[in-house]
Image 1 (cartoon, rainbow, N blue to C red):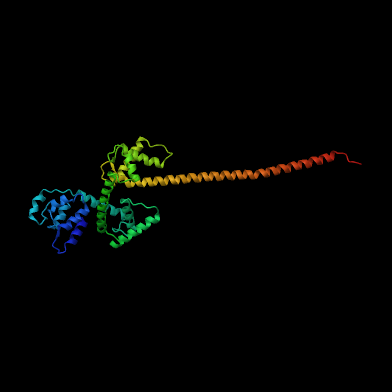
Image 2 (image 1 turned 120 degrees about the horizontal axis):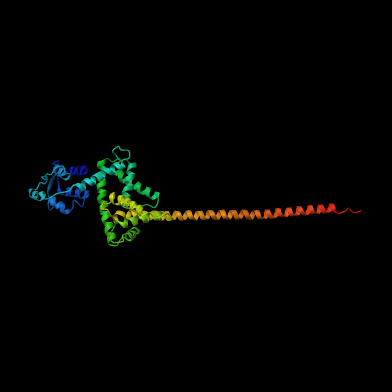
Length: 337
């Protein structure tokens, strides 16, 4: 919760230890707009934009360190606060994820992210927003541009700096996911990924679960093994379990099924990989055919070259035999007087 403390402290210009409601509201909504929605904010601080909140008391309550709700200055709000119960697990979970991501990026473990390590953050950010690149040149150009933005924040990032960025990104990502989900549900999304998802979602539930996930796994496998043996039932279950672990448990909401926004980028990536795979396979096949044709042509040319030589040798051999026969005949013929 260091980010919250730092932002609140920055807003406390007078040093009184208290901060205005609008500033707290903005920070809380940035951290988690779902938990800290308008209804919650209203119940917590009351209607309107007036009111002061004690920084230390509120932070202790919101992090679960204290059950006391005596942090609101307005006495008339105390009765409502007594009835307000907050589950801080969502906030704690997000902050833990921020710490885990920081440790993952901090390759040398020195507690700071340098520009080399922040390149990995670039790729993570691009992936979260489904951004793909046609080639390395395009990707490197985008990364250089993003790194310049990072440098404006600082050449190296400690955890507090990263945490602020991460929380803001997670909020933006959630908003983006909602928009993607709405576009899909309303039929606005005409992408190849949307088409494939609808094809896999046989029961039209809007989710892939059970046998549908197994079919999903089988489609991926067979696309990269067109001439191979099909998956056994046991293998299908194992592969579908891997998909759920990767897309639902690690990146989704862990509800045991796959929504469109949990898999659309993954499906799009696989479609591109499959197209590339098929293209390269066709190129290899064409190259092999060309090689075999060249080999055949060389063999025929060699055979054609040997034929005249054989005829010449046969002709020479015939002439030699003729001369030999004439010589023998001359010996047998009596000499004339």
